[in-house]
Structure formats: structure tokens, C-alpha cells
Length: 279
Image (cartoon, rainbow, N blue to C red; front, top):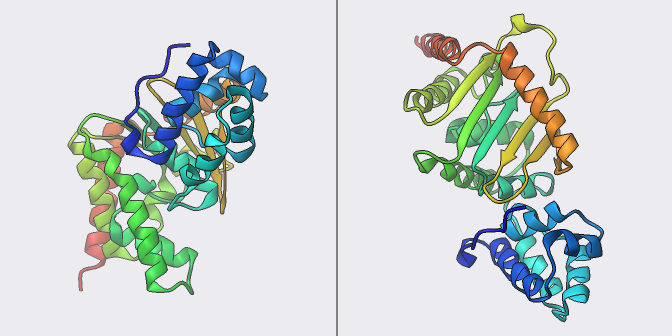
């Protein structure tokens, strides 16, 4: 396994923790696999901790302090590294997403969070939390827009999204919001910043009928898969499981319209929404 690259400790508490883990491990003369054996985890999991793509849990922090002789350093600091603006079921995936080199996502119902406009995201959050105060909605919206900053780099990460046709047809927030949201997606496509395919209703049954799927690839850590449902999510790092989800994604892309056909359909639906909103 290639060694982890140097991380910028100022980027996040978790990046700092990952950088600090590598040094005592190497000082102890342990490979990632050897340390993983003593922690009862895989060597790839240790690599993900060092690369900042996985969150350190308290039980792992305790074992690290015992094995590496770091007193209580990791136990004291894993709590700060675990703090997040995101819901518990999504926090680790969002943090991994921020350092991914490649993101591939299947969205069955909603425009992916990284591609949402503020008005669209607000409509989604309001639907999820009909009695929440505006302050709560504003905080959720702020966190979502912060996530989208990963797309400010003109080349990384590679973002490939397969959108179910239901994403286009469900008028989230009304015609004006949908027209703006779909035009935002198509603008990113025309700027060659993202790749989007639409999985049409006519495709019938497909490989991911049970829900959303996100695949994350990294420069110096093994890939991850995130499976999401209502108020729940699971981050998978088992190589066989990730490979199975990668096959699922390949099947989805094969069943979807081509990028060019998808762009034409999305622009057409956006125009329909725009005309619908006219007096």
C-alpha cells in the first residue's frame, strides 16, 4: 500500500489527527497492516485514518494510545475531530467527500447536495423539518453550501452523477425553484465541470432500486461506498463490498441516457418549468 501523503494540519482537526497518527506508527516501526492487526481493524482502515478519510472512534483512539504509548493524546483529541455540522448519519461521508478525488453518485429522488441551489436546498430542508425555526434551516443550508465549495476547483474532484428521471420531474420548491436548479446543473455540465446522466423511467427495473449510492475515491486511501436512506447512512470500506457497489454504478450508467441526451432532456424539463411559471 502506498504511504500516505503529508496533510495540511490546518485543514481540519481530523487531518491533524491523521498526520499525528502516522508519526508514532512509523516511530514504532509498524506498517499500517501491522498496526491494524493490533487494533483489530484492517491496514486499509489505518490508512484511511491517516489520510483523513475516516473518523477516529473513541474505542480506536483508546487502543491507539495503548499500542503506540501516546498516553491519552488520541482519546483527548478524537472528540474534537468528530465534531461536525452535518447529521450524525452523514457526517463521516461528508468529511470524506471533502478530500475525495472522484465522486460518483446515484440520486433516486433529489438533486445531489453538491449540485443544489440555495432555494432548492431550502425547500428540501423545509420539507424534512416543517416545524423547524428559520435559524435551524439557515444553519443546515449554510452547511450544504459549504460542502459545494469542493467544486470551486476547476478539475477536482471528478463528479459523475446519475440522476433518476424522478429527480427532474418532482417539482421541489415549485416551478421557479426547479427551473433554476436544473439550469444550475446544466450550466456545470456545459462548463465541463461535471458529468451527468439521466436514468429514464423507460429503463424500468435497475440495479439500485433500494436507494441512493455514492462512491468515493482518494489519492492515498482505499475507496469507500456510502449507502443512504431516510435519516440513515452507512459508509463501507470492505473491498469486496465496495467492488459490488462499483458494479452497481456501472450498471446504472449503462442503463442511463448518454451525457448528451441527458443534457438535452434536463434543459428541456427546465424550460418546461420556466414556462409553467409564466402568467
